[in-house]
Length: 214
Image (cartoon, rainbow, N blue to C red; front, side, top):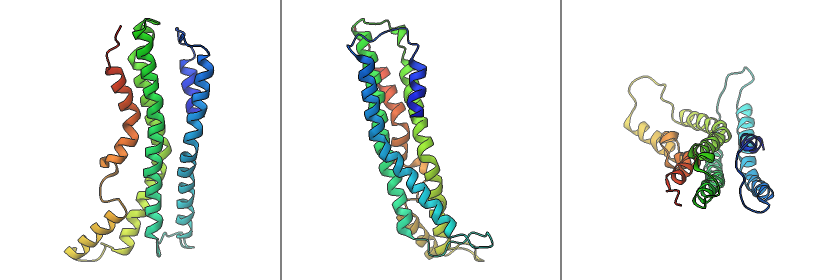
């Protein structure tokens, strides 16, 4: 709702009108539909974050020192699934909105309803960049919590703090466990993460590269 309000405030002073009957009402309905579609996925992210925080509090000893007794692998994997599914769903919703904005710009300019300077490409790019930032704000806290818990679980199960060099068996076991928890690669190098975060901006960039026609 905050993101939608900000976008509407920025675009309120546009100097052109869209020649479509009842266009403001249509946009309001589409915006409400998009918000309704996104709400369950945002809620699932928040619930997963709340659950992860509660588990972390339960795993903290009375003297304040954090320990991780029997941290469940299934819990960490479940959080990863929330990140993966919610990220893809939200990126699809906002990418669709960004694509529609770019398509609207092309249609208005191509039909000579407005001048190109009235609806420059930077508007669409800014729209995509804004929603990419919104996705980061929604997902990043849960991603950081998930990675911290996952690596803590690996360290608790297969510690590397012992003296001497690490054995190949230990390193192999840690690699297998990290793969099981999906932290065996850097998050920013994960194709799914890149797709989810950058898809709104990439969609905006693609639509602005399409010739305007005439």
